Image (cartoon, rainbow, N blue to C red; front, side):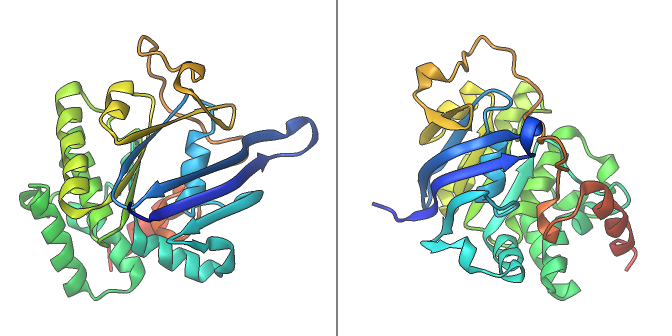
Length: 272
């Protein structure tokens, strides 16, 4: 049996206080084995995106333990957590988070730039990732030149440049048509099969979830049996789980900061 790459124990996440208190997770325990694909399923507000953010070290729990390769993350300093996240994890989101003022290659190599690699090395690795995704011919194009499917492939290339052990995908096909969605899904599951990458996929899509090795159903911040999850296939997929009040979406490569604040920095980086 493969060892657990990610573990949580009695995980609790609370936002706000008093009348504004929201219990996003209520004592959640699970483990994810190395090389498996896991779908996290639930309605908006079920806690699935909160769980992903905690496992991906994008946020800290109110209580409980998150462990990576058996080591509790609480033992690490912030600088160590940022480094570990940048080296161990890749991210693919429904929103592409591509800087329109930069080339595709510049967008793809951003995690390597943050990690301090030389321009020559990061471009080499970025082009390798784009080649794998059949996007090398778009390396010099601006992100705005790409179709939706090409943008998501560029995002997968960006997720791969650090050679991650885990890829977190939050509604990775949510903005794509069915044909393009199938291409993206085949790429992700191919990476799991060929490279042994662990996939954690947050989704409303039962068809995508069924392709994973395992499905975890959440309801009201707890893991429940499938029949309790109320995620019937006939439901219209919603647009994604909103961040709780007061929380901003963050880009994972920079160790925190709001999307808006990072956008300005990315524009400056593209001119260096």
